[in-house]
Image 1 (cartoon, one colour):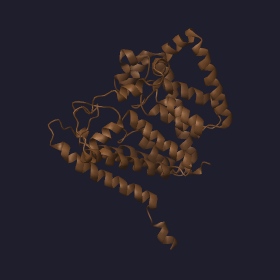
Image 2 (cartoon, helix red, strand yellow):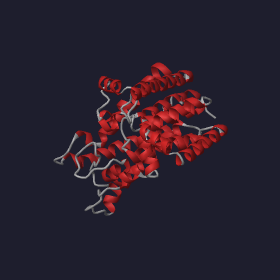
Image 3 (tube, one colour):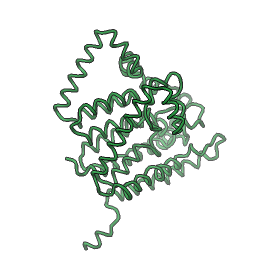
Image 4 (cartoon, helix red, strand yellow):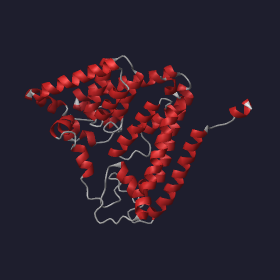
Length: 344
């Protein structure tokens, strides 16, 4: 009986996750067939391609890194993350202090042009990552709080640098402090934020300094009370002229309205809107179930699992995350290594 158990490749949760992914893939193929006949059809508008890219460019690299480097050595896992963090902070400083070096590094590593525009050059995009404006800052904050327990100064440096890159990192910071921090650290952070807020309210020069060095944070949280990005995401006429019946509510319009795909006349950035238009409430529920099962497989600690699941919800509110990206790469790497099953 023992030998038989050893031959079992997947436990019940892993089998459920695998079957769900297979079902999602088949479901996306069926929905994609409706798109292929359209005049504006593009290969990158197919959701089945997104799942394939997640498997080959997130799942497979994570497996290879675990298989040939990490295996069951938790110290190597920690070391790999810490060196990645230090390298990212070094490149942040270099790019922040020298726009010319930032341009050179972006061109060398083909990181795109959006952060090289005049209004972004000295404001955001400081680091080596294709997701430096999206997932990377929040992931760095989460991982720092999970893996590095006593380095308070390092945590502050990570938070400050990554908030400059992405407003969304503020949400990750708050969650990390409330749920992952130690009580003394939480108290110190609370006092620090409280005093800083009081000083800034009564000091115009400090507000001007914040505006110059962290303009995105200033306009998002000081000038607009934290509603600027949310207003942009919600201010859309994407549902104008759309008839929603029970079929479209459940199964969507089989249309990809993502702004970076460019096949729809009216586009949107939010992953939830994109998923609804593509596959309706059914597809959204399938995605939520997939991320939830993945989170509880990674973490034995229910709080950690909930926070990781919550991070996916936050990410998908700003952009479509189904596909190859840092979130799923780390998720699969954690799944293989079971690193966090040893925590608490």
